Amino acid sequence: MPLFHIVVLALVQGITEFLPISSSGHLILVPGVTGWPDQGLVIDVAAHAGTLIAVLVYFWRDIAGMFAGLGRLAGGRLAGRRADDGAKLALNIAVATLPALAIGFAVQHFLGDRLRSIHVVAWTMIGFAVVLYAADRIGLTLRRLEHMGMGQALVIGIAQTLAFVPGTSRSGITIVAARLFGYERAEAARFSFLLSIPAILAAGLLEGYEIAKSGDWGQFHDAAITAGLSALAGFAAIAFMMAWLRSANFTIFVAYRLLLGAALLYLIYVRGY
Image (cartoon, rainbow, N blue to C red):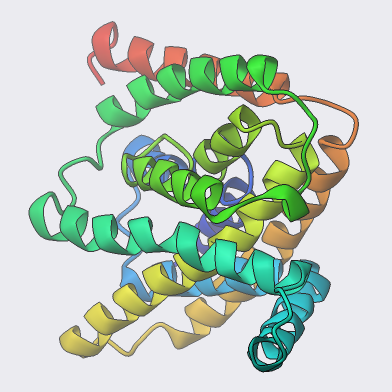
């Protein structure tokens, strides 16, 4: 694969995975608009691995706290103590992950790639822009992650399943759900990004399984470059989002989605693309 193609795909995956503008939608648009051939599963897995590295590095303190909390919980059960914030966060992440695991396999089995089209991306870009704007305006900013219960985590996890429709945005839909429960913007993003760890890992393992079945073990040089660039771009995107949401809202992303969706509809229905 040409180096320029690798760079573009890695940057697109790394940046859009953590912004509420849909990584799957953009990865559909890149070959659709440019006419490039499909990048293949090896590059997909590498790009996912890069974004996984980014979130693990950025949130290493939260991750360490969750493991430490689970360890204390195991001992605390014997002593009759309640779970601390680290264990509570880990359990909420686990609960929120369950719906996506169940629905993901069903979507893959029954729908496959049928939703992967520019038409779908165009409409979901616009539709979800309205949802994102409304949720951000309606949602209060009263709660932090230590206030989250398993019921709320489960609802956020159910919302995450909508991201199997390209153009919706996994990070965006989970942030919307958290905002509707009244969580601060930065806290909603923090939970969404931590929730991406099992989601990205599951996607990578599924794609890795497909590679193992096909016996396609080539492209490792390209894959290494893709993973590295995706990790750097992903880390930068997370840092940007966390800083941005401490003092701003989602309007800039709403505007981007509306403009992109309108441009795609123009290409489809006016230019016959």
